Image (tube, rainbow, N blue to C red; front, side, top):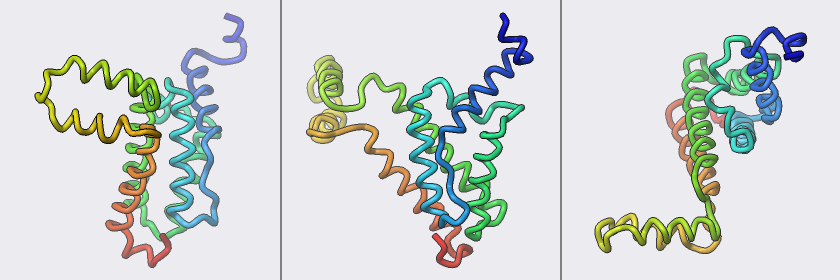
Length: 180
């Protein structure tokens, strides 16, 4: 209970924990082009959220953000605004990118296996319990993709991130004058 001599209440503790997580995420630099800055931040955010599985549901829910959280949001807005995004485009881009990154991190952190021997064992367990031929596309996916040597679910992140960012460029690119 002596901790409450240093902080007001439980919310203040959670706010500080969330701020510490935001402090671990690499931010875009002011002179980054948009895509470079957003990609760097997305990769770092995903890695950070996987390490701190408890954090994603809390990260944008706090009403008393700390300095690292504020710095984080300011840097993300800056990399968009300095690269030609208007305010609405900035909001759309950040919301879409965050939805992808947060969702992927939650999924990756909560999967019972993500690759290697663990994935093979889990896949064999699941497919053994399925009636033969009942789910042919799932069987094909498991056999010919998820169980191929070197498969790691985390590697799917890069493909998805490219799809998301390409979509943002397709939607907002003309206003960006080739800055992406």
